[in-house]
Length: 389
Image (cartoon, rainbow, N blue to C red; front, side, top):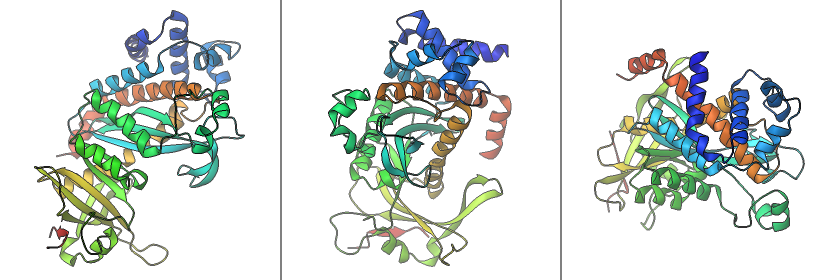
């Protein structure tokens, strides 16, 4: 218990400078302590009760009117994660998660598709950035997505605390902004990965190429493998033409029932890129048919240093699921989705404190001797594509 308390003391020593007064700093520590505690619902009332307050006023003030530097704390969070988990083979992962809401007052809320719910719901969407490496993974940045129905209604935005300078930005644009902040801070990272919503955005891919960050991003089957060349260059058409010997049965990691095996095929894409770098098309095929009797195929566009192996590309592709695990643990353990705020600024305050609590759990777990031992034991006019056989 003493180690736990001293660890929190050290963590808040890092962020102390983000508060102009001692009172909000103490309240923030109480808030994070409550998020880490076995409290049934991590809302204002129960967090206040856990802190010994009779009313939730102080907790509400922390998320509302109290003055403290949220963006600066996010910088401290990123540095904290990198100092404890940083690794040159790390992967930056971007994805979104939904927060189901009632009414129309919460900033950014509208009926929109939520992958979390698997359907269209009245919800908010947050775009998050995660840092995943051999020792662990943690969320390091987030932005609330504001649909055009919000940014084109400035009185509604002002009522929800959205600053006038905040304009409409697509989810890939928000992802680029967060990645730019992380890369400008000099974090150690070699790769990035994302799902189709980001992978099909050419500006997102080019952003990574310009910064010499390799990527493995999911794309839809009708994605063009290369632009400006003659012929049918769709991903599914190219994969359908792959010879049988191009497919290799490989594991993308261990699951609850052992190695997760798929058939994989990799092709070099002969299209312009920077010296020393290559492009690839990676395909993953299921081993058993779906309900329609079909073998499902996932497609990935890849870019990275020449000589990168298929095993490395598979590792990066599989790293995308780390952010899903972060979402699940952050919601279950530190109340990422259990806030009761409506304002834009209050959302970012709660999310930042929840990410800080989640990072503390991730780093504490990573530093446990058994975690290090377990990891050490488990890691001992030619055609536009050329298939690796």
